[in-house]
Each structure stands twice: as structure tokens, then as C-alpha cells.
Amino acid sequence: MSKVVLSCRGLSKIYGTGAENVTVLNDVSFDLAAGESVAIVGASGSGKSTFLHLLGGLDYATSGDVLIAGRSWTAMSEKERGLWRNRHMGFVYQHHHLLPEFTAVENVAMPLYVRGLPKAAADAEAQEWLEKVGLGHRLLHTPAALSGGERQRTAIARALVTRPSVVLADEPTGNLDRQTAEQVFTLFRELSVQSGVAFVLVSHDPGLAAQLDRTMRLQDGVLSDASL
Ligand SMILES: Nc1ncnc2c1ncn2[C@@H]1O[C@H](COP(=O)(O)OP(=O)(O)OP(=O)(O)O)[C@@H](O)[C@H]1O
Image 1: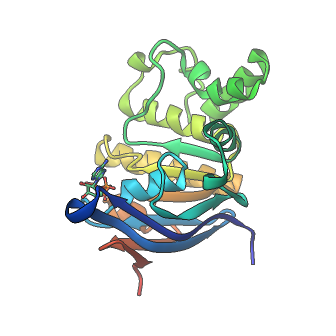
Image 2: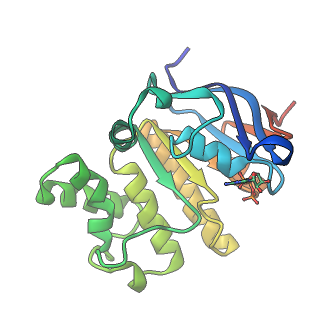
């Protein structure tokens, strides 16, 4: 059995209090092995983004816990969470979240600067990743001078440059046209497989979900295997 890199145990999330409350996650338990990929599907409002935020330690569960590489988010301070995310996790969202005043290389190198890597070494790593996503000819462009697909490829390079254990992706190609979305997603999946990164994808697109190892459905607060 391969190593578990992400484990959630009895995870619940209730928004609001009293009669107004909404139970979005109800006692969810789930393990992800190193290098494994899973798609989370579910109707709009079923709690997919909430779940992803909790997996990334970006929000607080009402009860239960998430462990990343063996460490629990609830046992960490905000500062420790930031360091642990930088060490173990990559994130890609529907919107690229690139910093507008920095070049593609600097955007990709940003998590390495945060780690304290000297700029020249970080930029060299970032350049390698931009070449892997087919943007070796766009190194010094700022986000405004990149196409939508190029921005998402830059965001993918930034998520993988730290060689994380887990990547969380929330509709990573949701803003792209169908053909570009498929190309960008296939590249993302292939690079994750090559790097041995575990992958959690939230997507409305069954075609993308089908490319991953497993599909799980979130419905009425319960996470279940969608193939059953
Ligand atoms: N801060 C909040 N306070 C109260 N309710 C919230 C909050 N954030 C989300 N919700 C509710 O929790 C439920 C789940 O929201 P979430 O965004 O996780 O769903 P989703 O499955 O990602 O939806 P979509 O596919 O439309 O993006 C929704 O009913 C939403 O209204």
C-alpha cells in the first residue's frame, strides 16, 4: 500500500448557527495515496469548494481533521500552516491568481522565493517548469501579455515548481474554451503523474474527471465513490 499523503477524518462543516445552519459536509473520511488522482464532482452548492478549502487548510472545519503528509491542520498555527502548504501543496484555481506586476518566471518562482531560495536558482527552476508547460518563449511576459491558456499553464508551473505532495485544483480550466481546456488539463495531469504528485480536482466536466484514477461524488454532505 503506498503512502497516504492526505487523510481526512470525520470532517464536518456547518455554516451558520441554530435554525439557519447549513450542513455542507457531514462526517467525511477520505484518504489519498502518493501519486493518486481523484475528481470530486457534485451539483452546484454541494460543497466541493468548501471541501477543497478544508483540505488545503484554508478554512476551519466544524469538527474532524485533515492531515497532510502526516500533520494535522488543527495542530498548526497560521504561520505553520503557511510553511506546510509551501512545502507540501500546490493550488490551481479557475482564476489564475498570478501577480500582475511580475513576469511569468517571477510568478512561477514566487513559492521558491518564499522558501528562501536565492533568486537566480529559483528563476532557473521556474524557467525549467515554464519550458515543460510549453512557455519557454514567454518567460518575461507579464500576465496581461499572456493568453488565458498561457496564464493557466503558468499557474500550473507555479503549483508544481515546489514538487509538492498534493495539488488541489478547483475548476482549473473552467475559464478556457473547450479545446484549450482539454490541452491544458491533459498537460497538467501528465506533469502531475510524471512528478508523482497526488491530485484532487473539482470539476463540472465529466470528460476531465474521467481522466483521473477515481471519481467521488459529494451529495447531501456525504462523499461517496461515484463509480458504485
Ligand atoms: N461563508 C459561508 N456562509 C454560509 N454559507 C456558505 C458559505 N460558503 C458557502 N456556503 C454555502 O455552502 C454550500 C456549499 O458551497 P460551495 O461553494 O462549497 O459549493 P460548490 O459545490 O463548490 O458549488 P459550485 O459548484 O456552484 O461552485 C452552498 O449552499 C453555499 O451557499
